[in-house]
Length: 63
Image (cartoon, rainbow, N blue to C red; front, side, top):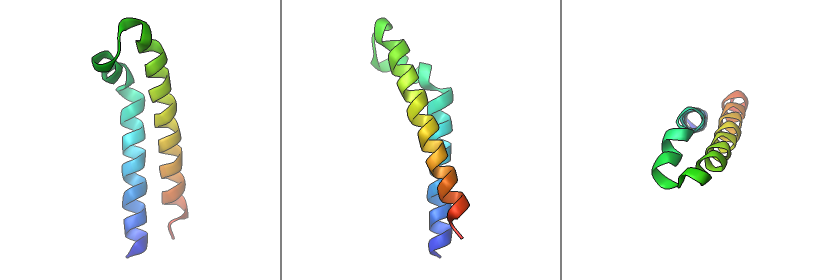
């Protein structure tokens, strides 16, 4: 049972990371000014990449 829960958590983390990577520009357009959009979108893409990697590791090691 705990393995299923860990895999679901890992899958949700990967999904959230992918959403952050692909929609970073759209997300930052709503919250930041024009000068801050580039830095914020790069930051969101980095956070999304790290989140997706951690989720993938959780899925891989949940045996």
